[in-house]
Length: 191
Image 1: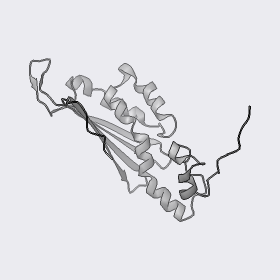
Image 2: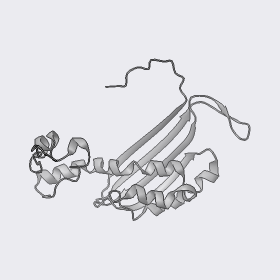
Image 3: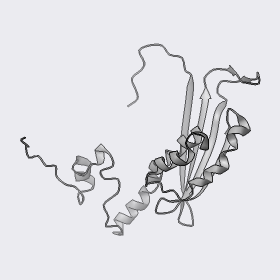
Image 4: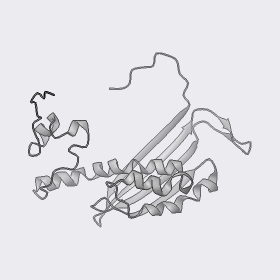
């Protein structure tokens, strides 16, 4: 269901688009390719007196990480098509190879912030990396489903207790994960 229409007239200003595609590789690893594009809805003058046209990207960047089946990054590459300060912004791209060795499921965002916070990185590239953990989880969904069907995995699915809908005492767990469902404690507590 979409948002209700606004009650007051508005003027569009800025659009940020983030897209991530994931790929299963022949070598058993996965590539996650993320892209961020920022555009303005109006023309504006740039520092050199040139006109930046509405709809032309202010930021357009790419980040690809390769992960193994443990969600550890084994390769990383960053690239820019557009940045407000051109080569000054783009010169940080090689530094994002330092994502290699980080695990997407083990305090990834904190590790990225520690490595690339403030002047050690690019604000927008760092923000783009923050979407990778949940995309990786979605990318592995088909493999986990096949493993469950084949009886390969006896471990509790990691997504359980990861959000309110997937709590182990909730209806989703009862219906879709009955093996892991735990009935809620309904005893009244007096204090």
